[in-house]
Amino acid sequence: MHQDFLPPGIVALTGAGISKESGIDTFRDEGGLWQRFDLEEVATMEAWHRDKKKVLDFYNDTRRMFRAAHMAPNAAHKALALLERKYEGEVTVITQNIDPLHEQAGSQRVIHMHGRDGEIRCMSCGTVTESDADLSPASVCPHCKAVGELRPNIVWFGEMPMHMDEIDAVLERCGLFLSIGTSGDVYPAAGFVLQVRRHNRRARAVELNLEPTGNETLFHEHIYGPATLTVPPYVERVLAYGWK
Image (cartoon, rainbow, N blue to C red):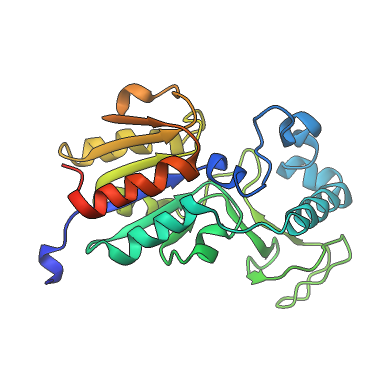
């Protein structure tokens, strides 16, 4: 099909709910990381300057926990990858998760707005490097050789999400917006659905979540239940019949 006649893009915003079914702790739920740790002490720039070792030890321990879980993409991740392969237009996943499960499932167009596990960033030169090595205040940047300036390439509290210009461009081209496994409470992600509807009055917005969220009135359709049970049949429906 000629590029000028491609159908509108599909954007799937995914949150912790989609990865929870692969064994990854959520931050907000009962027993989640926010209840077990004071994240103001381990996930802010102020904490980094105050005690780099404490921040990096938390990152190292959390990463090892991810690895020990033997996480694997679930049926919801795989369904979104199938949608990208089969749909004639553009399909983009914008994820609030730092895990690589979408890529492992086969998705090619994935935007990690909160950063990505397995990447480190130098606060001195800004270079991002793929690495699974533990970090410490003695770690040396492989590029500029600065000591003690390496941090996980993830967004801490008080920092702006990543890739916002790219996200804005994708939302402008969106004809179908899916919100999957996200609370709808955290901005700017919570405002994406309204951004889509402002750009394209014909766009359709669908919420697939365990329960209603605070911005449920902004969606045309609500499908409640675990992502592994709701996303695959919805993707099959879109591929077979479209969403109009």
